[in-house]
Length: 130
Image 1: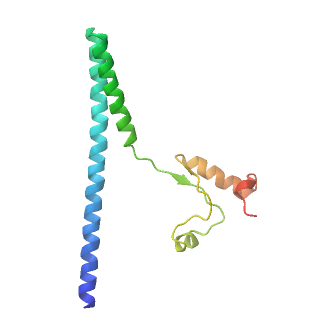
Image 2: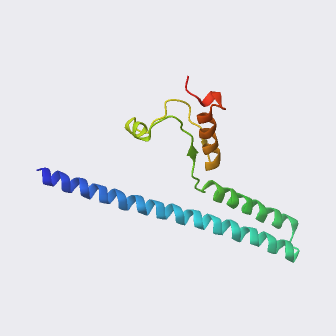
């Protein structure tokens, strides 16, 4: 019975990993296609301008290019950083990786590091513990 449960768990984990990998691959392909579409439409607008096409045609193509660029931007993936000071990483994981206060995120690691440095030196009182 225990062997069956372990085998089922392993099979479930493997299936989950495969599905996760397929999803990431599909998302990466979707981002790549969106970037390619935006670039192609921008080039089409440039060609229309170079050939002296009708202004309405150029505006319509530019609108489509702008929409494609916005779609491409919306699909971009970012890494976010958070600043935590005075908290043991083991304790943080034991709590289920949950914050006990408002969470501030930044796209720049240097900003998070600066907040931690200021907190440890006492220069940023709103980040220090009472």
